[in-house]
Length: 504
Image (cartoon, rainbow, N blue to C red; front, side, top):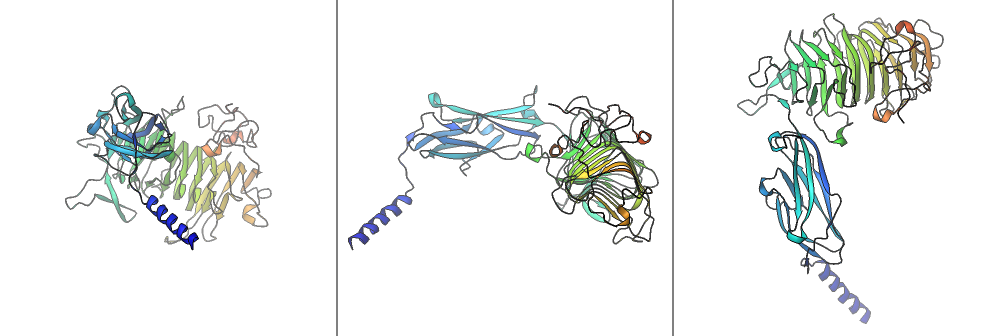
């Protein structure tokens, strides 16, 4: 009986202790520890909210302490805002008498929204400090954010609150047409390298107009945004060779999340959509990444799309989806796409020379290259593939088969691979994949040999002399310089890159 009474009393003491909400605390002595002494909030565009960043504060002492104040040095005027262990304090700027238990920690979450005018005019940094206590016990953690000025392009808001819309492939989407005489931005069809551009919704290029991107232009697309080329509209991307790692002369299309953790996240924005009767497209030195479909080419009006020195990475569906298009490509690199790096469907006419088409998307269904002369739902459903030629190319990836042919006998299906390194396993007796005995479709094929790319996980597809692609190209198809502007040797290497020693 006495045993049960003791247990009962112990239980009451335990309950009363666990329910206690008041603590005997001592004043902070300025001996807090922090997970970092500076919190760098990565680059943001003016007046666009940042991601949330975290600071952890530790009480290493044996005492429960009370921190008299945690506040931003600039007080209520600061462009930063915080929550301290879930509390908002005074507008997220000032917190009083914060309790921190012995051997415990608390979290501070920090965000910012600032204008370019708030930043230091010499380096465009906006800074502040989180101050803990004051006087002799004052401790500070620095906050640093780079603010970028930008040109913002977006749909107008209608009087009823809805957004402006445009028609794309029979669907109404949030979007607007670019104006070459806009009252605020001037010529919206000319993208310069003076400021980055941020696009919300789909920016449309009107009929019979040309959109031009100058060397060094930077374009950031918000979620569900993109670029649409209407009937007879033309796309001209005029990037040039860069001499530094900053890619100062490359034109870059990517999402508008600038934090490092978003650098390689697929599907952050929509696509570059080229309507069926758009025309005279030319792209040189473009890097496009993190889209849903990088280039969606719906066919042209009889003019050939010239695509040169272009890199397309991390697309959740396709790097290039071409439907009955006319495309001539030189020095192309594509990698990491959810369905196919390159998909040419419903026929068309294509030539790829010195392309590195890889796919390391981790699934059992993705491929590097897919060719088809049909399209479900189209009328007629089949259309002639009059040419699909690959010269001095690498077609590779993490899957067993990276090359897929979808032939319909009711339309022409003309294709040829010349001097290509190809990954394909298990062809068996299928007549479409007889790489060693079918000279009509395959000449000098290197099958299932590792090209030994430099760093696939970083989309670096350079090769050196140890690659199976080294000096295996046909000089008759050689492009004089590679994607970096380096002179090719003879015989040339396969793929977009001239071989060189890897950095040590």
